[in-house]
Image (cartoon, rainbow, N blue to C red; front, side, top):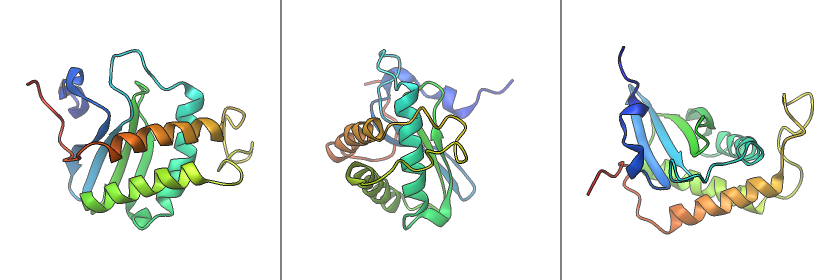
Amino acid sequence: MKTIKSFTVDHDYIEPGIYISRIDGDITTYDMRTRKPNMGDYMDNLTMHSLEHMFATYIRNSKIGENVIYFGPMGCRTGFYLLVRNADNDEVLSEVKDTLRNIISHKGEMFGATRKECGNYRELSLTAAKASAMRYLAVLENSSVDFKYKVEL
């Protein structure tokens, strides 16, 4: 059986940041790594679920919203995948940062936090989403981004 693309990256060298995981035709998959893999610092379900609700809503309402195909968490709980059609990396990075800022400054209710809108609506926290957004935004603002995975030095 062929190994899937995400299993070909040596996770020992992935640091928090944003990377291009793959490009399929006009769709770019971004690896939004919020935590270093295999270090024991994983998102709990509350944080992952909450950030997903907020980020997905804001990014789909951003300048690139019509080209967002998917946003969702990685099963390993160290980040998220963002799939964008006709992506311009600089524009995507800018919109990701703006989305994180919007989450941090969000006033009002959590998006999709009712029984009708969500299959686990009781497990959501705007405080958790904001804290995770602040943490990830600090990573993106304090490092240079070239969208490439780092390899062994």
